[in-house]
Image 1 (tube, rainbow, N blue to C red):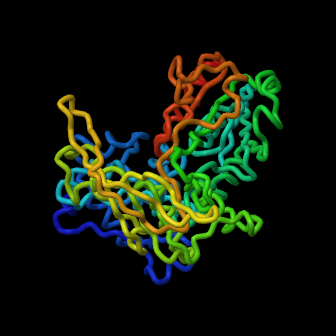
Image 2 (image 1 turned 180 degrees about the vertical axis):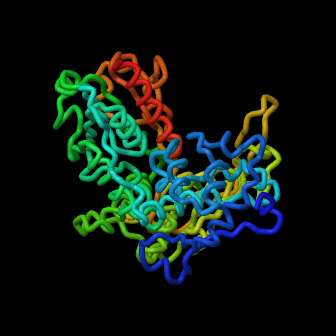
Image 3 (image 1 turned 90 degrees about the horizontal axis):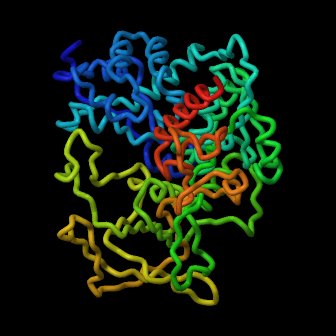
Length: 469
């Protein structure tokens, strides 16, 4: 099977039919049977230089687990996966698969299905009962508080618990998970997957305290007095805004307002009808061309929007290949998600000028066409062409990323230094300007990927472990 890539083509599980999936919030991705999955793993060439490993922020051992998977050793594949990745069931669903883009077979658009294999191995492990609570044999007597339960906080808590420390995770929301739970739609990540892992972490001795904001329900002094170390994993929660004419009109919302509400509704949480944001029967304009914008498209389609338009200020990326980002770099090319395939008009090189309304209600968005060029210094420069138009809209969703953490004065109360963007300055790897306070995830990296957050949490735990010794 060492040359299976020569005879076995890449085979993806694909998506459920559009006509079916837009009527529910179940995961859109399908699964291959075990035989097909083993064949896909056999396509790995076990390269002398594994660029897939190089590209992965976690340093996952791709060739190693593909090798044992193609031999049918599912349990061993899971153990190899979790030696570097705490939550392969998350990354196997929502990671952009940096590894696949750097696979040597990506040179012929036939990369190994690493992400799908990762999810399949993890689901097989849970199904067969390989995944069991494994609490530490002894405790160190040290107590660590983790503030925030997103992927960085969960990874830090897991690694610290394995070291034998007593770990308490504080979360301001009603349930743990951060943006995994309240940001990523259920059609990409079923929340039962999160709950399954949380139950395991609790069985291993980690305590979760929800509805608790540090600085409010839990005083900062109490936090610092009770714990030997504190790890801040509060994320980058402040969305980028557009301070334009008409911003206060009814119908203009941040993307996360819609996504959070819909996730809460799917979870059975109550939201008063007068507070609900709905795309039903509306002309929706999503401003921002990234993954969060794509999630808004999928959610709007499921809410039965009349039309969805997604606009982006940057020019349309090349299709298939980009000379500016050659292999093994992550390619900046046109990405079409499952949500785009469900129905969406996509437009590029449009700058938003103002929001138009009548009687306080949004009725349209004025946009201007822009051109991009590269300056002598190599910087991208934008100028308007003079062409403008009005896109009819009843609902606008601002999806332009996040600018800085929302800490509500917590960093100041802790005495932690942070930069102009609100990100905590790491004096040493993952350590803040306050000796016993450490940081992980978006609070120090800026808004980034789930896989980078997990890696940051693992590194913070290692730094805390060294500090506590």
